[in-house]
Length: 400
Image (cartoon, rainbow, N blue to C red):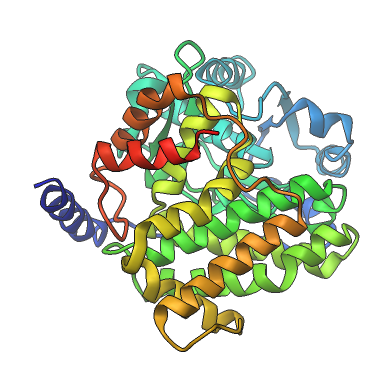
């Protein structure tokens, strides 16, 4: 009955999606592209921007080029730089208050997925000032235009610069949930590879695996995808196969960095409609409960979840194996799927990513199961539908 309920819900969602205005943000690409953003703001007659970012990025002086160009173009701005790795509803409220107090008319999200999610949350609160973050979490609860949002990713992973989701953690209860609404999609994404060149090997690995998870989950899911999402996911996987380890080994490889940004962008747009799956549903609980970096949670869970799906995921994984040109033990879908997952595990080992999540406590199992189940079912069109017992069995296998 659970599977039937989920599939009926997903079919109805697919029908509804044909009435949603799916878009892809405009892009400004190339080395130094971030310096061209203020001219665009001026052209759009924007007077004052709220720049949403984190302290680490301020300390690395990554914003210097943007701020200098803002002053040259005489576009005013105010900084909110308190975003944590897993942004909270408290931070969204602080940014919202600053936006109103300072009379801002647009938002620049500068950083990885966390500043972008926080910026989207702030935008949602501006659009819906009488609703809390918790009231806005879920599907299509904003339904009003947010202030123009411009996204400047400094990692190549989240794809948040082209998604309609903002993942926010409840500061009091540590529950992590998404605001999902087409109005949250940024107007423009600035893909400047110079901003990612200072990333550590570890951050490069985690964020790259996040992008790969987005693409593969979207690709192996059922129901929601159109040809566009399938093509974007395939492009993303191929770019990651060719460029992630290069960027990890040599952070100054500008071409690899640019290709990884493009891969993250493609993967983000693919899962915006194609959706994510149980890797994300379980991974979000680890971020909420333990503060596990999102990319680490994705990378450590990814091959295990895909294997747990069994034959239902073989065809999609086999096709990705072919796209990457990976050798397989035999010509069956199962053999090719295993070759693809083995490549991921070998890549994880080379990038020193743990085989299993570093922290899953037995006493938290029921909370993890409950949160993951409620996030995923019936929304995520995964290859197979897991009951709570299926989730429990999987989580138990992750406990050291």
